[in-house]
Length: 129
Image (cartoon, rainbow, N blue to C red; front, side, top):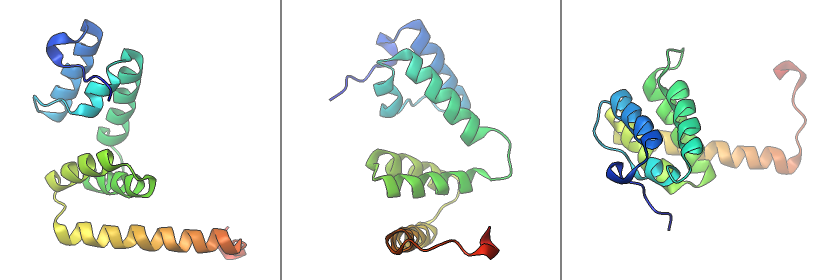
């Protein structure tokens, strides 16, 4: 397993990113994802800057919708860590168990119909273009 870089043992470059994560998320907690990728500080910095921009900057999608999309992609990609992390974040932003169940139903249905469309090699209707 990858070594997890704790704050106390982190380089200054890593601590700067950890401090920004804490400030942005208004928490003292740094989760294991960040601690693992801190083994390569440029990846840590680049990944955090992207996540911060995509998930927290102003936009048309509210924070809960962003988390729901992240869960959907994580379920489809089979990332247990991201499913757990973003489900916790979504619950913090108002997702309840009924919403989670609906979301999983949509994900399952979309994956099924996507595979059927790909398998049958269905041409896209002109009206949808």
